[in-house]
Length: 398
Image (cartoon, rainbow, N blue to C red; front, top):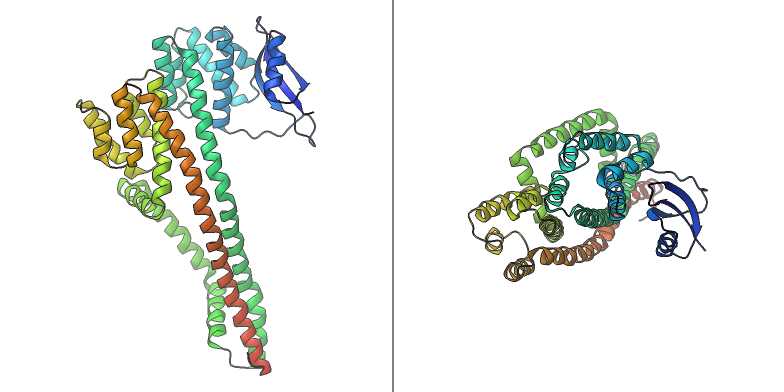
């Protein structure tokens, strides 16, 4: 039976930690609630490293944990300042502890929670702050924290899926390039010296390969400088509006299906979460636009925001922009007509996230064999060129 470490809090605000043997996290949660304590964190203890585990949590991971624990504390009936005080005491990350202390200090001095969060823009995005502000205004901060947690978890899951899918192709490309460089710059020069001593005329393919090898060995520093210079020039160009637009336009041409599904899912989930939290429509669209990664899509949404501000509704401006798939447009129209736009937007996000995972899987299934074939052709060319040279020396027909 697996073991689970937990951190819990009782009604008096006392935090306790321990380890429980149970079949699942849900069972641990029920056991703790039967003891009249509120579980803050439940995590399975991994075997092989003992109780102390290495932890490399990112800023987004800390934000997700902060949101989850704050929601748990406030749902148990504790006020905001006391909940933050408890979080300050139990947080292990020093930077996060300082941020929580600063937020708590601002609240005790009479400031609002959203204003305190706004002082730390690197951790709390505009979207996060606006959702909290809407929760404060409507008196539904607990519900907003729950929606924020759902949003963060869904976004992190999608990001992790894309990252894990790209690991193997990236490793394949790096190892392939390194292998080719080693063969051309280390292995081939040894054979070249043997061919030079024998004075035998080499086949054309081998001469081409030897010439390329000599070029790399002689001008490697120029190649590195040129590559570094090109990288900095390209990076500077892509920072301009025109560069970003052209770069993102090229991405859509190369991977249009994946890019549009990703941006559709990301935008609709964000907009749905904002609307559900009580953020006004125009402000919600502006905030959701800020999280769009593709500049072409983001630029098109500027016109959408303008038309919504002019009172042209929701579905028509999106349809006129012609940036999101037709199915998403139809669902947005239905949501607007039924008065359930936020619910429909979340459904669109769920649908396109599933579709995106399928598209990524299909893309990777084509990319992997293409990369393997490309590396195999280059490596095969090098090996065959060497064999032809060896056979020409020994007069063995090839």
